[in-house]
Image (cartoon, rainbow over all chains, first blue to last red; front, side, top):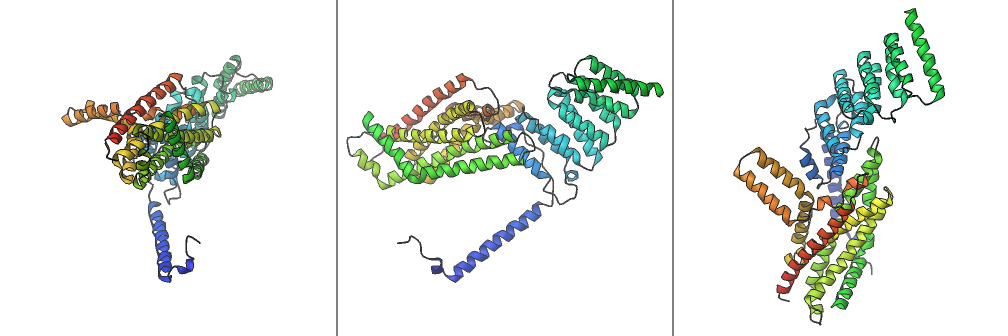
Length: 237
Length: 256
């Protein structure tokens, strides 16, 4: 014998009530969702201890949850430039919390250099690039990629060559690891060339060639040709 | 006594298996792995870190909660059906019956930990996943003992589940709570803050420090000290023995 009776056994009133209840629930949820989407305010982060506590003592899970939530914060706005609606000071505090809880991860720096720097608001863009710079100074061998990315953003999006030069120079001077590729250290040379500082660019390039950071012979030949070009440009200037 | 204990332990485990245990574990693992893959897909870089953090949290917390629910509902059903009265009317002693029950639930904890470790193999090297699984086993043994204790003492499903989950949450967060309380006590001279600080330290002494047990850090390239696993094993034996004696004390006093 079947354990349940057929659906036909249910009275029409009950079925109608069930349909109405489901429709009401979905409508209410849709309304709540639209209401939530109209603001992008994110509160300042609580202390690391409270964050750890909320993840039952699991710091890594707390960090993951923070980042997933923070990533979704820019979706919670109907504004065209979602990032402009965010308070970047608060965002940086959350990124700091993430870094302290998941200290081996580079995710926060990636978010700062590649995601939050995409805002149309130049002052916010600058503040995020500075955030990357400050963190780069603490761990140059770890964050050089994001620093180079910041230099490119400063050069092409902010059109601030001096800022780009500051970041690229920092990569050359501060990084010590052999895992940092030669092209990252050479970036300063190309910015100086664009600025018309041929003599300094040639000096920096000569320094890099003498330091033997370039292992590939073809790249070495290319750099030597570049050095010769820069010296030529300087003479013509 | 040993023979009775083994029989009760094996029947307790068989009862759990027949109670849709395999299906429950399969659903639990699918949900955990699904949540982990979802979190990984949200990440721009370091997707593996996101996946492992979420998977470890879900498996660990889920195993503890599911195990508690299974044990408490099983014991309450047994007490309501008066099965224990029938068993104890034979030559089986209360102690044999109780140790047998705990043995069965420890086997259940082992099954949960093995399934969680095997799931972790997909995302992580086998060696660290096994160590993590070993620590999870220690944690789930403590949880099984606690659930059994609350089920016997309280003898009410809702309250026992509530107590077991509160115990688990407190044990996982007590270190952080003690730090917060100590910080507050340092900042102000209020008598209340001082009292709270000492009270929390006292609670800390009574609870197992579960937050140090199976750390996600190990799965993310952190060092696992062999002494750590040893100290977890010792802590598990001491704490389970403590819970067992408390439960036996209460069980022996019950009018059955």
